[in-house]
Image 1: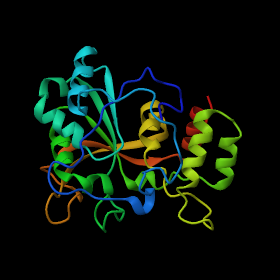
Image 2: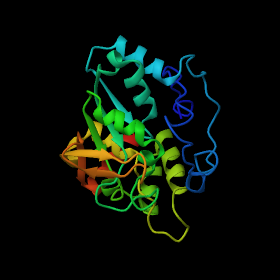
Image 3: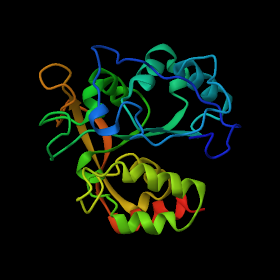
Length: 249
């Protein structure tokens, strides 16, 4: 992705290969074996950093003013949990975490009770929720409302920017079938939209527990749970317009 955008000035590091506990989950049926639906990207212009993600995050946080950095978490929370466990002083320097994951009132997409990211590593989510950094969670209840039609993708591609053309190609692979009128939910962009335009969302604060055994990844409201800000609604039309504008710059 960085190579497409010509951003060899941005460093990146390899994240955890497996969850804190268990074998993890696979979603090749949706995203294909390459994770990109078969869309071909150029080779990286620079190698990953020598450190793993935990050390890379710790070094980055220590080099920035405390509280200045927001972490946008699009997948399982394993890397952040390892940081909280192994480098607690560096972890405490995070300003806030915005994470895509979980389901509150809707059915899951990794079984009836859980969302994929939470189900992949529920123990990591438990550690992150309990750690001393505020978390805003964007669950399936909200992300399922953000989708794109073929006409939407045509409008995006017409802007002609590298980001818009690549995003349009990637989202087209994300349609469940050629006959579908809309893509599957655009889960991950909700995190960036929350960071840039929080007014697109309504949030509420809940105390949440996460099941790590019976139904791994299941979130429940409970008095003894960790305090988490949870997105409960989105303006989907305004959110899609904001996303398209950002990709068209």
